[in-house]
Figure 1 (spheres, rainbow, N blue to C red):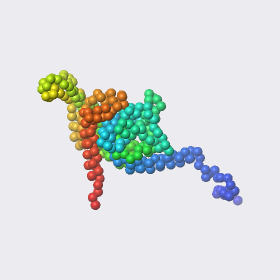
Figure 2: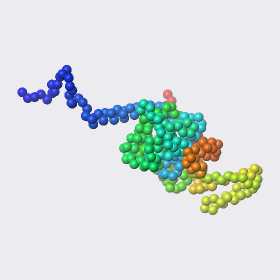
Figure 3: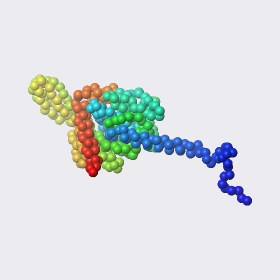
Figure 4: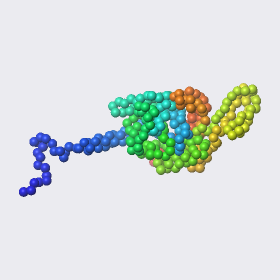
Amino acid sequence: MADSPVSTHDPKEGGSDSQDSPTPQQQKQMESAYANMRRKMAMQEIGRKIKHKIMVLSGKGGVGKSTVSTGLALSLAKQGHTVGILDIDITGPNVPKMMGLDGKRLHVEQGRIHPAQGHLGVKVISMAFLLEDEDTPVVWRGPIKLGAIQQFIGDVEWGQLDYLVIDFPPGTSDEPLTVAQSLPDIDGMVIVTTPQDVALLDSRKSITFSESLKVPVLGVVENMSGYTISGVTNPETSLEVAGPGGKKHQVTSDKDGKFSVTLDIFKQGGGKSTAEEFGVPFLGELPFDPGFVRGGDDGVHRIVSEPEGASAIAFAKVVEAIKAQIGKSDNQSLEII
C-alpha cells in the first residue's frame, strides 16, 4: 500500500510539525504586516485628533517655503491655537534650526515618538532630529524615504492639535502623494511663490499637481513681495529714493518726520495674477525682510523677535485668509437634511 500524503503525526506525542512553524522570512513578513496595520490605525486616530492639516508646497527652491511654514505655525500659535509642524523635507530639513531646536533629540516612550517643542509651544518633527551628523547627506531611494514619512505620521504622539502645518521639499515629488494617501481629511495646500517669472512658472505646476492629488488649493502666497525702507528726517519733507534699476520713488515724511517706501525688489503682483489665472484664492503678500535671514541663523523667528512688526502683521493677515478658506470648505461639506 502506498504511503499516504497526509501526515499521521499525533500532537499528543509531543514535538511539532515543521510545516506549522513559519520560516524566518515569513515571520519577518508577518511582523512587518502587523506593524503596518498598527501604523494605519494610528494614522486614522491621529487624523481625528488633529482638527486641521495644511500642506505647504512650492514649485521650486529658494522661495522661502520653510520660512513661510514656520511663520504660519507661529502666527497660529500667537492666536492661541495648538500647532505642530511636520518637516517632510527629508534631504534638507531646516525647520528645527528656524524654530530654535538645533541639536535637539526626540523623546521616545513606549514605541511612540514625542515631538520637540519650539517657540510659542509649537510641536516639531523633522528628519534633522535623527541625524547624528548634520553635514552627512541623506541619500535615500523612494521606498525608504516614503516609509520614513509614514513612520513620521503614524508613530508620532502629536496629542490634540488645532493645526498641523506640513512643510514639503520643493517641486512635485512623491512626498505630497504619500502624505495625501496616509493622512486623512487634509484641508488643503498653500503654494508659496515669489514675484519672479521662474517661480511663478513652477507655482503653476504645483496648482496643477494639487488636482492629481485631489487636495484643494487653499491659496497662493507671494513671498519676498517688497522691501520697505523706513526712516526719520525733517517733518513734511519730500524725498527721492532710488530703487532697483534706478527707478525713482517720491515720498514725503509726516509731521513727525517719519517716512516709509516699499521697493519692488523683484516684480509686483505675479502671485495674485497667477492665482486669478487658475481660479484659486490669493492669500496675500509677505515682505522681503532681511530679519528672516538673521532669525533663521539665530533660531529666533522674526515673529518671535518682533511680534508687532510688519512681517508678523503680514503673516497674521495670511493666516486669517487661510482660516477663511478652511471655513468655506467646512461649510460646503455640511449636509443639510
